[in-house]
Length: 371
Image 1 (cartoon, rainbow, N blue to C red):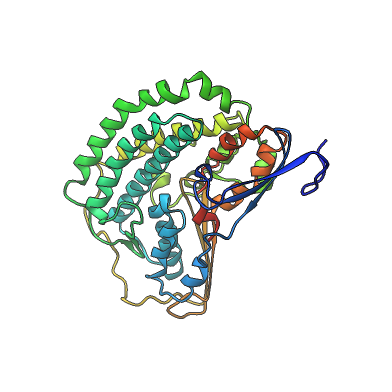
Image 2: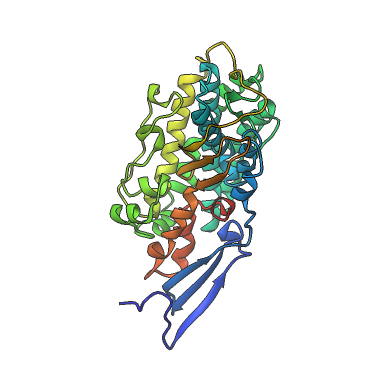
């Protein structure tokens, strides 16, 4: 048995991974206690990129604060903005036009695919396969081109507003999305050939980073991390928002509880996002893309909470309003923070070589954790 967390014995070695390390994908500092090559303890240290986003939001109006959240989980920028807009709409009882709801869901699912694409390429590169990274960016860049044409941005979108979206879709949007779907379907077999079916990759992932369903719930893990252990956690299914309850798609669950199971969840989730997009792309209703609202928004006095399913899991937005034009308090429940809390449990007792494989399947975006 290992000693209690934080204790060391003769022969132990304490090493630092990060905060400048490519496999941490951001300024994450891990203090690792080793006995030989066996991990006894991993202690994450945060604070290197802390920007007080929640405090900044409290000095911004209900239109302005939404766009600060693009800089948290920047790979889920649309979905972050979407969750914030829904919280404001809930407080003001704004009814979002049908066209805007469909546009929002389309953008969310394209965002999910783009995020998973980057994760897939980076995951393979973490384990020594460089080529998949370029293949991932081939599809991701197609999505970024679509986003840029409509939103004017490729990463931090600033497109969702209370009541709908900032402006209507570009005339080329439908055609380019259909072209992307065909591109994706023609290339997905390469993912299996290069990575998923690769025996070296499987040996590095299977049986590594195991977390039981009970521990998933205990640590508050959500998203693909939870669903890789068979725990139902998809906000789109459990607490549907916008038009998700009218769409046909599956919540992807794997029961392997290991790194490979979490990998397969994301691979299959991309296919479900394509399925959602196919249902909507030829059925975008006519009408307004934004509800008529006042230039200056005031939420009634009270507390309001909404949540959405980002590429990493459940994002919660909590607003306390005193009835003014700015929030009195704002708190974000980011999925990465809870998922990171399970890292020590995932890798303790394993080998140092397995740390990167297990940590990669958490899909950490550090500004989402260190807000």
